[in-house]
Picture 1 (tube, rainbow, N blue to C red):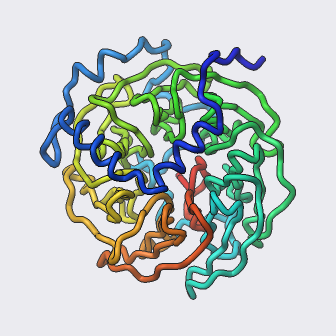
Picture 2 (cartoon, rainbow, N blue to C red):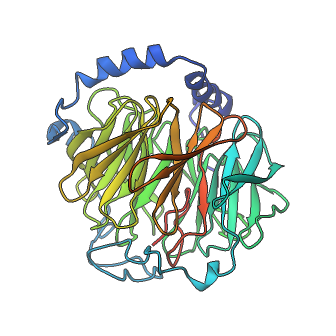
Picture 3 (cartoon, rainbow, N blue to C red):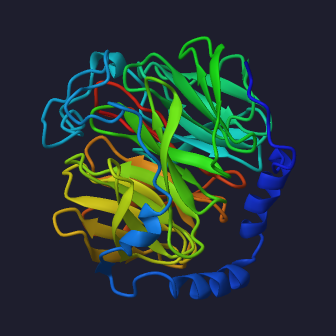
Length: 411
């Protein structure tokens, strides 16, 4: 049964124009807000978070819901207890992606198209129409299908990963983003405007359970090392929620200090902390998923947005969308090691690293382009023109045994 919706929740159109307005030059207002909010956040590059502010909103957890010692039934075992991404090395391409054509998939949100780029020539191979406001290109759990989330079109467009060719769209309510449970049993459609997480059949997309969440602007998430719970960001609620995967219920929450706007969520390689990008405080928070306590904060740059693990597991790439830069957080120390700036500026948003880890591919959200960045030097290799409003770029194929969704979280 679909849960009753709150009477005054924002509509899909409201969220759409909230996002578009940012891209129409309201950066001066955003900067003023950021300056105000930073007064609530730690001022140094890496600090300990004010524990009381985060812990006040933590809720009691369901018994056994997040036990670190018991993996989610049906989830493939982690190859290395100290590295959840141990299956993501360049040599770890699975049989499922053998023969897949290497392409960069770019959903052009304001053009209602997907552009495919050859990563070796940096040339556009094809562009084809999809539903309204495509946000992300999401690899399926079995890594055989790439799904385009057509947010305002209320549909998903499947792409054959072997050929790069699209198929008929599947009707789905408000698919801003999409993930897959670690056991492969469900697709989780992130219905941001409806404030829901819809658990669906991962192949047919038939609805199995709709969970209304106290999370305005729910949009990004990641799963614990044992697969038993997920942490999701609430972009317009300045908060995070914790959902038990087996029971499909909210079991905890936390509020960020100040008036933040949490974005991407990424589990550390050792599985001990979640990194949370905050585009208003202009940095990244560290969260203990078990206790829902904030552990620290690192300032990275204006509009911190997307988070990606380097192929050697040493760095966390942080896209600073509002200043055209990428910060590298050293995962061994938790501090910012360096920052790469795009020559001539840009708006780096979402993407992923190449199979060999040598290139970081990112969308230029407000510039109608895609960036290919050398991960050894930080140099811009290529700036490729695409459609308007490019967003969740998928770099395919990827190493790993299965996909948790988004733009290619594999384990």
